[in-house]
Image 1 (cartoon, rainbow, N blue to C red):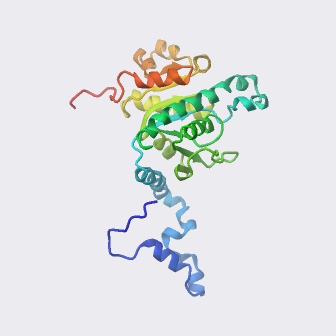
Image 2: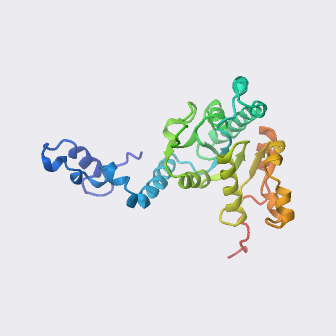
Image 3: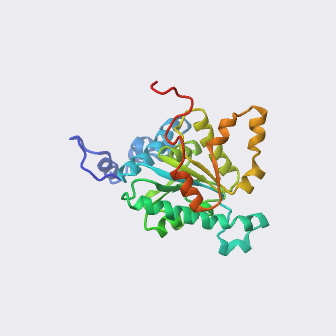
Length: 282
């Protein structure tokens, strides 16, 4: 965190927090009511404090990324269960074994993007992933291959997931709230690459599409790796034919198969940075 001197003349909260741990042991000081409110985890986890926890989860990563000077990111979404090619024989389905090629493509795409990021001092086009295994690991690994940094936005889950070994430790975050985590994925995004995945990947993809479709977010390239996979999972044309989306909504994303395809599409994307449905000059 920021170690800059404080601008005010008051004793700071860290000093008082430390001092409060070295007070006389009495019935009064042992009472939970005597703990400093911001140093009392039982108090901070009360239901009534949910608004405060939401704010803290928004602020902590935001302040740290500001201090790191990160101004733009490239986001990689994708399945935690997609194995590296070297591990594909341990995959539980033949489809996962086939999809292992996208681990390599994610790693290569992240490496290529990070080479551009390094040239900016690791400020622009910084790779962001969920920080876990599978495609997320490949993303962080590719950034490390290029000598850059990557942001990992982990979340507490009952069965997974520890951060992968390649995410930059100082940019590795942990979340309780899915909604705040998804905000951080998109707040600095200048492109979103989506690899095959499950419910979580679909949730992230559709939230991104919805925000852009409704003009709540400026247009950024959305790159779907693996047309065969996505055409089996989502019948996009059927949605347009039914009238539940517009034909123009099918232009919000592009299919790509290789890292180079994705980098080219990201670079030459039309309408990048515009906001849909907003009248110019308003």
